Length: 599
Ligand SMILES: NC(=O)c1ccc[n+]([C@@H]2O[C@H](COP(=O)([O-])OP(=O)(O)OC[C@H]3O[C@@H](n4cnc5c(N)ncnc54)[C@H](O)[C@@H]3O)[C@@H](O)[C@H]2O)c1
Ligand SMILES: O=C(O)C[C@H](O)C(=O)O
Ligand SMILES: [Mg+2]
Image (cartoon, rainbow, N blue to C red):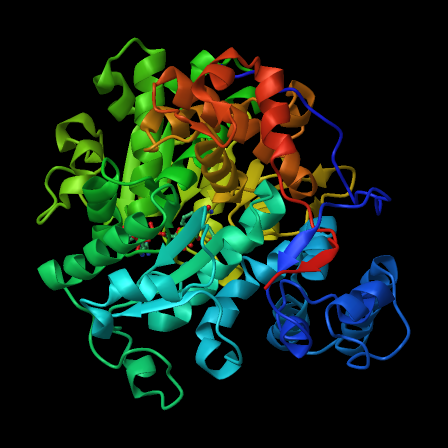
């Protein structure tokens, strides 16, 4: 297993005195002030104002970056104070708005405050607030971000992709808006998800924000409420289906590949049938992965291995854990597939052993081979009723938990509260000394249970993880640790590692290496306290490790072709520590560069 070299968490990097290299700009005057990439607001030095035709367009005083940073944080704190006691939704959207306005105006300052305060700002630009933003997107819309390809653009994509201003794009996050978090079909409004994921790419992986592209494939929506909403900004038609749908995605993928052959495309929040279908269709043709299937599986596997360690048991005991997965969608099935593969490997290739320990439940209850219209993707995990003593097809969550006494109850159902008091109380009878409850659905309202509910009903000795953040729970004489089991711990490293290895494709082994790296990140002491994942404060360190593990796997799998000046030979000769340093050294960091005008 990949050994992790841990570095101290990098909180706020002090404002450095080294002058960053120059940045060429092809604009002058107000065009610069209106371009969030170049704009420094009041921070333009006088000499730069002269060079770029900015004299007189700004108030005369030059404000330092540090001072601008403090001013923003002061306004943020005032907003917090002034909205105290108001409805949560109002407060969250107000916080999102102030961050979004900065994003639209001054990207360097925006990304610096985001990186330095990631723990505080992730819940605003990512889950859960991003869900609220998507629900209200048409009303919130002010300025576009990213690209929109719609059913009406068929035949035009090869040329319209050139409307994007950047000649170099490394990372694309693509959605069709059909399954936004647990909120369902939000049509074009789902663009908030690629934007939030790419913000995490910049913050966690140091992908250069000039080389990212959020994309919405608007193929219609089946959401009646949106179709009737006069403000709705998407195409007003039911979703395309079948070959018509696939022809749009095909055309988009060809267009991307044609303009940026090395760009990595992350598929995000596609409904299950298209999530699996597109992964199968494109994974060997393009450099792509599906975050909900693969990223989630890796994060969940790391957590599942952590729960074994938290019981003070060797990893090989994973084979003995009984795991109930609630939710048989792209995420739940992805988790099961990866967990079964892990068990298979540990037990020397016997898939039968693996399947006996996993139980799958969907909206119709326990999934067995007797299920009518059993989804082909769920077939490998359907139980044979003959192997079930006392449980039958369609058994409810409570029936399964009472009978199976699982070590782990893991929810990816998208349904808030399905782990109710009765279910959680039944987990007290778990065969584990530290029963684990993973309420992984997003956003917060869709979590299968809250942290407080889990600790108060299932007992204080549990291990708890959720997809969206909850505060730790005060248990009187100890702390009930809340882990955030979210694919944000893996997708940035999968993307960055793939980019820096120059791999043409993303293989299962590369994802597995990422998951194992995350699993080994925590110390025994932490895991025994119930801390399964690192704090989001050190997400850049985690991503450097994960990225290096992905590069290692890409080299071993003969997928790596090198990146920039670093060829395959150099990559192959790097030690693990060197690889981590290579990844770390390639992370972009927001600092004002001197601007040089070029015609
Ligand atoms: N924490 C993470 O990193 C992470 C990653 C991916 C997805 N998710 C979350 O997981 C959820 C599901 O995502 P998905 O892509 O698998 O969705 P999906 O729509 O493909 O699948 C949902 C599944 O839940 C089942 N279900 C619905 N109601 C149920 C009920 N009452 N009891 C039991 N099962 C029920 C459905 O039958 C279906 O199998 C979403 O909320 C999403 O936000 C979290
Ligand atoms: O977006 C997230 O927070 C995680 C995941 O990709 C999801 O779909 O819920
Ligand atoms: Mg997702």
